[in-house]
Image 1 (cartoon, rainbow, N blue to C red):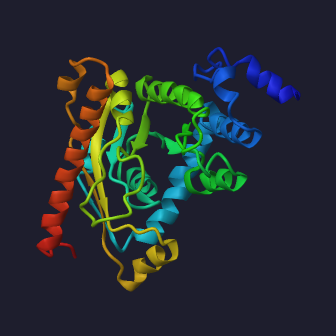
Image 2 (image 1 turned 135 degrees about the vertical axis):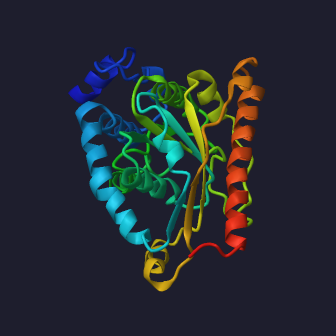
Length: 295
């Protein structure tokens, strides 16, 4: 075992110096060498000075290229709902998911249209982004390592779900600590590749568990007009592609759910309620689009 491994395992059972949780040895043991290395890299990039540097790059480089690829198409509604939130308390954004670029686009809008300080975190399925060095690179160039923490909920990866217990604790910590953290979450759990723009998949209970434990501010977001073909998406900015619409709703009051028992059913009810709020924004978009009010 090399010195780096010894040092990492020595701190697995205690918080790091800046208070961030780290996984136990039992939780990391099911991961292979590539997965462990990918996690350690992303974990470090989301702490302290490294996180501030990554945020600087997101604000001044990442948001710029997204702006340049969408500025002729972009329409944003309800951004004042984000601007009005408490910057000393984490903010969770829950959005529908149809494109690889949903949260990248939302992050660009936030950086360029609000003055709210923020550190971005996007919980992600670990497959590719943490299981392949190419995925590490994509996490860097697309998200400046903000695709964190990772979850290994893949078929045939039952043992690796032990690591997910840490990721859930870490995510709750990110959503709880007094900070300007902004967490982007897709309650559907995966991209909806079937149906139309306004069709939504059922919510998974994970977001409900996170919010039940953190009680932080949550805002629904509806995104339309983005595709998964990057060259086509970029060219559409100058060739008359579909308008991109991003809707931010008002903060959602979940107090009625917090009064219920801490169990899976309650978590699922929270997720379903949030999806209904996202759907309401989708209906606003449908009405506006059908009225031909988009220029």
